[in-house]
Amino acid sequence: MVGRELLLSVRHGADSLASVLFFVLTASLFPLAIGPAPEVLGRLAPGIIWVCALLAALLPLDRLIGADFEDGSLDQLLLSGMPAGMVALSKALSHWLVTGVPLLVAAIPLAGMLNLDGAVLPVLLAGLVPGTALLSLFGTVGASLVLGARRGGVLLPLLVLPLCAPVLIFGVSAAEAAASGLSARPHLLLLSALLALTLPLAPLAAGAGLRGAVE
Amino acid sequence: MLEVEDIAVIRGERLVIGGLSFRAGPGEAMLLVGPNGSGKSTLLRVLAGLGRIEAGRVLWDGVDALAELSAHGARVAYVGHQDAVKPGLSAAENLGRGAEAALAAVGLSHLAELPARMLSAGQKRRLALARLVLRPVPLWLLDEPTLGVDAASVVRFGEMLAAHRAGGGVVVAATHLPLPLPGARELALG
View 1 (cartoon, helix red, strand yellow):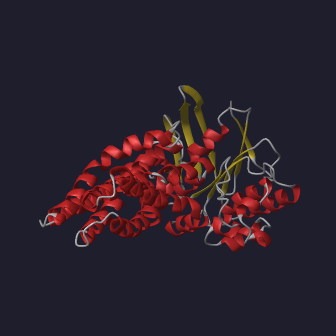
View 2 (cartoon, chains in turn orange, cyan):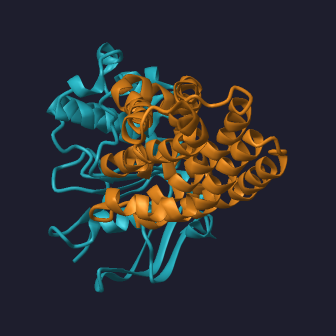
View 3 (tube, chains in turn cyan, yellow):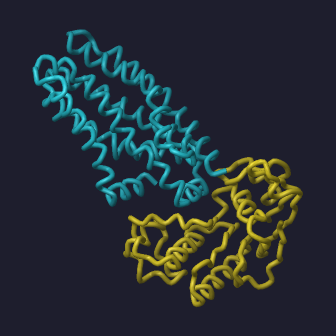
């Protein structure tokens, strides 16, 4: 099923690229908005990258399950013999592979552009790996809950963004700790712990959401 | 063996199906008839485990089918109103594993590599029907399966249905069009 999702995203290449381009473009607006002073940008860079990644990851959520819901594919997925939670987990995994991983890659040149300290970059990326995975998991829960709702696309960020607040806090503090010479380890461990907690729970919640949507 | 015992389905605070019971043994076909809105599609979704019942039981071989939904899904093939065809994938990619034989069964082998967005409405419907033979399942639930399908393809679909029933499969279908289901029992709803 994940393979099929990847094939679909390759066929709809423009949709898949859109969130990465959004990420790059919004992050590039910051130097224009707050001025090109390198030391200011360097200090703000982790926060800018995290917030932009979070917003960019939200973009494809609307269609992540919505398209399957509308064309009847969701019925077929739920009848495939897979538990609904596994269907949701596959959706989250494909969202991460299609959106999260390209965001990670795009964060590297962006960090350079925003004058992020080279020593902080590995920590930023180490935080973004569990961070983007968490965004995919929370996003799948949100996407499954708004299925069939009118204007679900507007509701979705309202549901998902508050859930992502802890991810953002620990992710940015990891990078800031590294920038000020402190150990980033506790923050990264907390992020990983959050992922370990969410990985089994979010698919269950999203699976229940999928079942509820088709009823 | 599919057994439906005294089920009630409520949709939007309206009793759509109430006190319905029937059973369908191996090789049998049930034809759901009734006016629009009489609950035919709702009943099919309930039998597939995609709808909620307020009362009663749905049994498969004597076991409560709706207690374990993913296991029930594995014994059901459902063709709904929507074709569940992805326009960006080719006909064969839409079906996935076992596509060749399934496409041959509905006479679409020559279009296997064509993107599904190029298919006509009837051909998309036939692609949805091809999903029935992708994996062997005992229960086929069909909602207006032949809508928009040409006469020759309906005959071919009749052969699929006959083979399924000969192998001990059960068919429950809702339709307003004549279906090639000889000896099907009619169940009037509404």
